[in-house]
Structures are given as structure tokens and as C-alpha cells.
Image 1 (cartoon, one colour):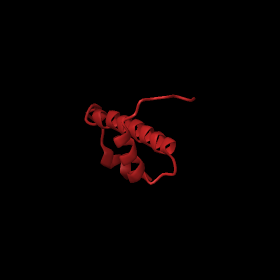
Image 2 (cartoon, helix red, strand yellow):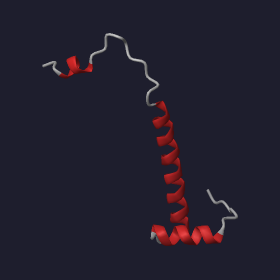
Image 3 (spheres, helix red, strand yellow):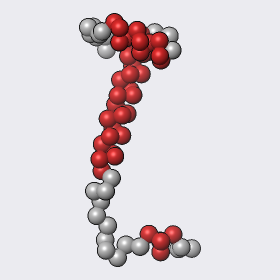
Length: 66
């Protein structure tokens, strides 16, 4: 999809030089992918310590099953 966006040239040039990619399009696509990955990771991290285990749950016992 072709899109025209007013992107800050200073930010784009800095990202382009840091990323070392061939084109500015590649730079923008990588930035979007990294943004999405970061936000999805943050959602997973927020889920830590929100799971309630059954009172009889014994993870050590489950390790020893053969």
C-alpha cells in the first residue's frame, strides 16, 4: 500500500543511519516491525503474576514423572 506520511526528516535520517538499511522504506518497515514486537512483548510481560495456580499444584512433582 502506498502511503505518503509527513515524517520528521531528522528522525528518519538518524534511524536510517543507525539501521544501516539500503532504503528509507526498509528503515520505516523495520521500525514498524520493532514497534509492534515491543508492544506485544509488553502485553505478555503485564500478564506475569496474573495467573492463579491451584493450591495443590506442585511443579516439582511434575518434573519427576518418567
